[in-house]
Image 1: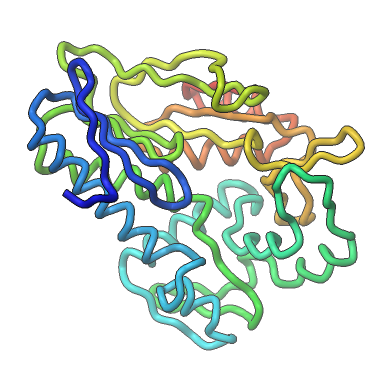
Image 2: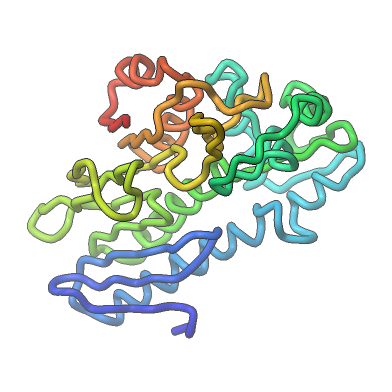
Length: 296
C-alpha cells in the first residue's frame, strides 16, 4: 500500500485516508478484514488522483489545460470529458444560466481568504467579457471558445470523483463502503445489520468544530455547498465564494450552507449549488425538489 495512504481499524470498520483535490479524503469500509479495506482504499485513491490529474485546471498538459490554452482553436475531447461537458451544459440550462463552468476565471480578482479585499467594479467588468457558457461552441466531441476564456470543473469534479470511486469499489467489494471527499459523500449500502451511516452537518458558524444536526444515510449521495471556509468580510458584510456568473459578484442573501441528500453525490452537489445560486429563495427551491436537505 502506498505511503500516502493511511488505514486505521475502528471497532467494526476500517478508516482509510489520503489527500486529493485540495481536501482530506476518507473511505469507511464496514469490514474487519484488512485486505478488503486495503483494496477499497487503493481503488478509491487511485481514482481520485486520476480524476484530479485529468480535470484539475491547476495541472499542466491535461485536457483542461489544452482547452484553456487553445487560443480559439478547436479541441477534440474523449468520451469521459464529453460526458462532463454535457453535464455542465445541463447544469447551465437547468439553473437558468447561473451554474457556469466558465466563471472560474473570476477568481483572478476574487480571492476568498477571509480578508476584506473586494475587487473594483472595473476589474469585474473587464473579466466578465470572458464569462458565459453561451460563448462556448460545444458539439461533441469538439469544443472551441474565444481566446482568454477558460473552463473549470471545480463545481462538479469532486462530486464526480466520489461517485466514480464508490462505483469502482462496489464492482469488486460487496462490503458496505462510504466515500467522503471533503464532505462530499456516497454510501454504497447501509452498514452491517442495516445500520445507517451517521453524517454530521457542519455548523457554518463553527465549521469543523460542531454540527447543527445529523443525517442518517443508508445509501446514496450527500453534498454541501456554502461559504463556511471561503468568504470575504468587509464593513460587516460577508461575501460568499459562490459567484453569480451574470454579475461577477457573490450571490446576495444566500444561505451560509446547504446540504442535500440525493441518489448520487453529483446530483446532491448540483442541487446544493443551485440552491445557493437562488440566494434568499434557496429554501423555496429545495422544498420543490422533494429531497432531504439542511439549510443554514
